[in-house]
Amino acid sequence: MAQTSVPTEPGENPPNPPRGSGATAAGDPPPAGSSGSGALDTYFRISARGSSVGRELRGGLTTFMAMAYILLLNPILLGGKDVKGHQLDPAQITTMTALAAFITTVAMGLIGNVPLALAAGLSVAGVVGNQVAAEMTWPQAMGLCVIYGLIIMLMVVSGLRERIMNAIPMALKYAITIGIGLFIAMIGLNKAGVVTENAAPGGPPVTLGPAGELAGWPVLIFAVTVLTIFMLMARGIRGAILIGLVFGTVLAMVVNAIVDISDKTWGGGVPNLPDKVVDAPDFGLFGQVSVFGGFSEAGGITTSVLVFTLVFAGFFDAMATIIGIGNEAELVDDKGRMPGLSKALAIDGAGGIVGGVTGSSGQTVFIESATGVGDGARTGLSSVVTGTIFGLMLFFTPLAGVVPDQVAAAALVVIGSMMITQVKHIDWDDKAEAIPAFLTIVLMPFTYSITAGVAAGVIVYTLIKAAQGRFRDIGPLMWILTLAFLVFFALHPIKEWLGVS
Image (cartoon, rainbow, N blue to C red; front, side):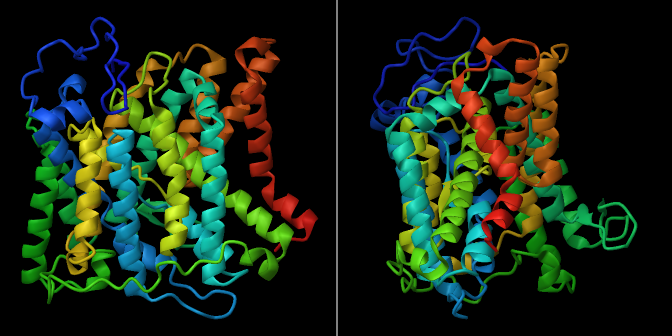
């Protein structure tokens, strides 16, 4: 895939694109199907990026449909009890999840001008709900989200976060994109019920369906949806992903109305017409945060380790996602650098603060943004669309559960298939590139962790280059990252040594 150097700041004049890149320079006429609709085109540089208003609107809607499940999943992730035995109200969590996604995603579109949507990060919410809340109260746990967001913001302001991202070698950046593609495909297959955990003792860890075979109407809906999208794409139909998602949702509603299917079978979303469409939002969790209370509640060492865990979960998951989607959207130059990256990183860092203040846990860039990119989104206008729909969900929360997991999963599998095409850019004859790339690619889906894949790739790349005596290829930041990732992998014995639970 051709790489182009495209600015991300609104109003910035784009540099001349490399020959054969397919990009459109500032003075060139818009490509066929692009829009020159006045202020929108000027601000978001829609024509300059070879897109159109229609594509951006469609991409924004597609991204929302692919990540709307967070409105249902986040209350589950944060549904446990804190150290005092208190639980958060699910309706309030849903409202705050929508509010935080609205604020951060619209900000990403207007300020960063990139097609990246934000919401409560699954890795961050998982840490907050399962580890942090076990040590302190919910307001104190949200305070740690504010702290980790401030730390990442300081890294952005100092330029350290962007330098770290630019220090990652190009081969690893391609591998990160591929690994994320396989990772989100794995998420999709698991959500659809195609790949499931094997409960039988002594068998393989995962299996096809619940017992070695596909079963149930929802899986059939997934299969029909994903095949429909692939066939539409093969025919060159624009908006294939969105068309497929709408078709799959309607089909699921029809099947659910005819066949007796339990709500539990559908998983996160149930394709039923809701009893009521509009409901008043409940902002009761807003501002319920204690920034430094966790240090007195859980102790300095325990709290510091938890903050370190949150920074790792928020920083490197977002870093890998931005690299992967930036490559897929052709928003990077031939060295893998994305102009204006600092603005996008600052907003992502601020997402930790927004999530803490709203009580929805830290916000981060969602890999599902790739679905909008796959449907043509190239600018921040698509993010504004996605964020606006999240804002509307404050009043239309009953509609959040209409799209079943199996339909949304189809989009993830399709985008995963598109992202692995980056494999052609890796020199598989160069062991210093091939081995770290391989580990990065396979560990992301196999460990269900983006950070684990990035960490393994960085460590092995540095050590192999050192073994070859090619120290100049490494750079000081890669050494620092290697040490940090070694600490990441050794976190459990370190916590045991420090006496941290």
